[in-house]
Amino acid sequence: MIPIDRRSALRAGAGAAVAGALATGCTDSAPATPAGSVSGPPRGSAPGSPAGPSAGASPGNGRPAARTAPAPRRFPGQPTEIAHGPRDRPRVALTFHGQGDPATANAVLAEAERAGARITVLAVGGWLDEHPALARRILDGGHDLGNHTLHHIDISELDEAAAYAEINGCAQRLRRLTGSIGSWFRPSRTQHATPLVQRLARKAGYPHVLSYDVDSLDFTSPGAAAVTRTVTGQIRNGSVVSLHFGYADTVAALPALLDALERRGLRAVTTTELLT
Image (cartoon, rainbow, N blue to C red; front, side, top):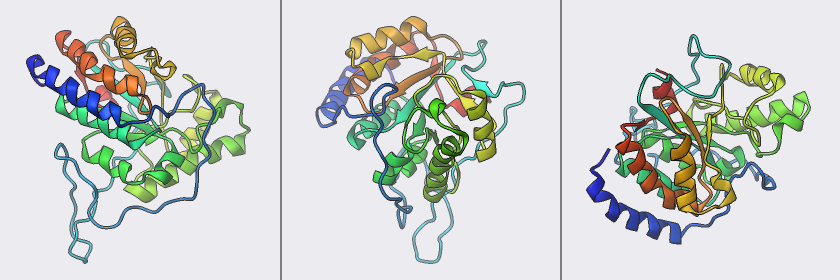
């Protein structure tokens, strides 16, 4: 974490980023946005971040190959649906539903990286179709990248074939862009996966479903101060927090939230690190 006395300057930077971002994001209550056509992976070297390497040997055209993204893994002793990590370590996972204006997403990533925090992004497949470069941007920042279904519709209401298409459709977009189906799967428009969705996630290659124990309610646009109060009022060792990329309140709340975590001795890490 960076010293608290530098955060006032960062808040000003975050505010400038918010001014250019649209509050049109992934919510667990708003209508779903249909995806467009599938975009292929970006060519050449990936758009990087100073916080993380873009490793790999040259593919023969003089440009470095993007490294393969981490794949899902099984965590022995953890349930199929994971809502939090160990309670005996001062670590937490800030998880973001990946949808909305890319300016907002980039502002969240930049602010987290300035503070030395790492986050987990559960991306909507249709969003990746529209903004494929963000998949590599997230990974190159040292963050986790996962699957939040293809169209972000209510997966609990779908039949087996349609639900599997939502999970696998996003998984294949992640694979095309990064070489992996992503580290995690989170169902859309629900905190908890049904037994059917858990089974279909395993079929698609995800040993676990990622839930959360702290809901920031940022998708209700309550204001930055309210987002910070909600999270800090509930968070504790091992917590997994649900947040969203698509809301200006979330970006504006992040500096104060990271300040609060630092004062309490809590370190924001990826979900993979939280459970390792």
